[in-house]
Image 1 (cartoon, rainbow, N blue to C red):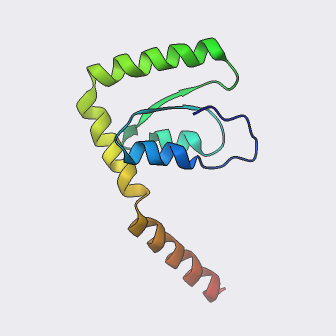
Image 2 (cartoon, rainbow, N blue to C red):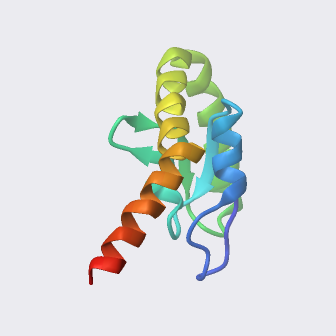
Length: 103
């Protein structure tokens, strides 16, 4: 998922791909690295912004890694799916609103 906009904080299509069980390739920008690289492991690979050769190499690396470490990718994708589930997002909003109301 190439991203060239400084204002981009979260790529919805990235999260949707993860929910579909697809390892992703994203640029190292905004909130994208936090989604792709998480404490449980990677859900894909990051590449540099505006570097076509690096993006192509990342695609090749991702496909090779996906075949070599399929089970690992699937576990990491499951973690991302839990982190961005509707239930998790709603609970986070409730916590935020409760915190704001206390202040």
